[in-house]
Structure formats: structure tokens, C-alpha cells
Length: 222
Image 1 (cartoon, rainbow, N blue to C red):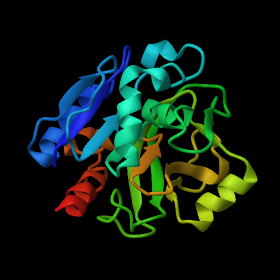
Image 2: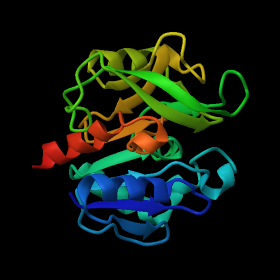
Image 3: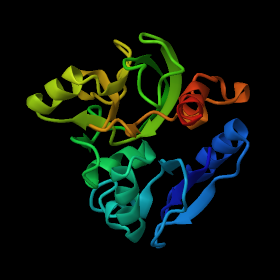
């Protein structure tokens, strides 16, 4: 599986994503600078976590206007898989590739800890290696992870099985609506999520429950 990781100024998780992808796929991902015009011909584009542009204005708002995002949008429209993690999820909403917005955490504090998630949708290209209802543990590290959308949008996400991951009951770190931790676009080739699966791919990091997400993509592309 060929992949690319977009590198934004002040991102700090691009290397984490690249390391996980290399370990699981065996191929070194392309590291694409935000000022470039084109993403190489790949199967997966990752928008990593971090604090692009220092989180000025709104988290992800400036990165969403980066030159490279024009090609990310074009490739997403053509069906290329796009994974946005943490700040990457914020960028996807700011760019209009996913609905809703990520607001300040309900507790108004930065949260950095492992959380328990439930797999809600196991039929997507990102989740087919899981089973519906599986419990997984990914770390979170964010101050603006409170997913918000109007009730009609939330009902549509639920009705179309586009909620991929949900925080386990009583383990919602940010106050996200309906405990939503990750969502899919209508075509189901774009996934945005606040928790970090790339930080749950090695036993030394305390969890390997993130590996099936990347393995799902490999299976889907086989």
C-alpha cells in the first residue's frame, strides 16, 4: 500500500504516522510538504495530528487553505483514501471534506491520556479488520476535540452508519456530541478521528489496537 503523509508547519505527529505506516505496510510513505502542489500517486493520504500553524485562528483553519489541500480534495473526490488524525480531523472539517466542527474541550483543558473507544462501523475500508462493538484503546492529545454538528447532521451520520468510532460511555474526554470520536464522509473514503491509532500500533506504546485500522486499508486495497 502506497501512502503519503502531509507535513504542515508545527505538526508534531507526522513522523509517528510515517513510522506506523512503515512498520505495518513495509513501505516508506512519501512526506509531502504543505506548500507542494501535488500528492504522489498513492492509495492513502494521511493528515497527521499536531498543531499546524500553531493553532492560530482556529485549529486546522489555516492548514485547510494550504496549497496541497487542493490536490488532497481532488484525490479524495476520485476515491483515494484520506485519514485525518486529531489536527488532521480538524483540517478535514475546516476544508469541508467532513461535516461539523471541533470545538474547545468541554472541560477547557488539554487532555492527554489513553481512552476506550467502541467500533461502531466495521464495514468501511478503514475498519473492516474490526468487529462491530470491539473495544479499542487509543491515546488522545488535544484541547479542541469536542465534535459538534447540528441535530440533523448528527442524525444523518447515525442513519448512514458514518460514525466509525465512539468514545466508550463515561470515557468521553472532550464532551463530543453523542460520544463521537470518528466519522466517515458520504463516499466512505475519508475518515476523521480525534484519537491517535498510529500511537497504538506497537506493544511498547501500551496498545496494538490501532494496527487493524491500517491493516483494514491493506485488505481493502488487496
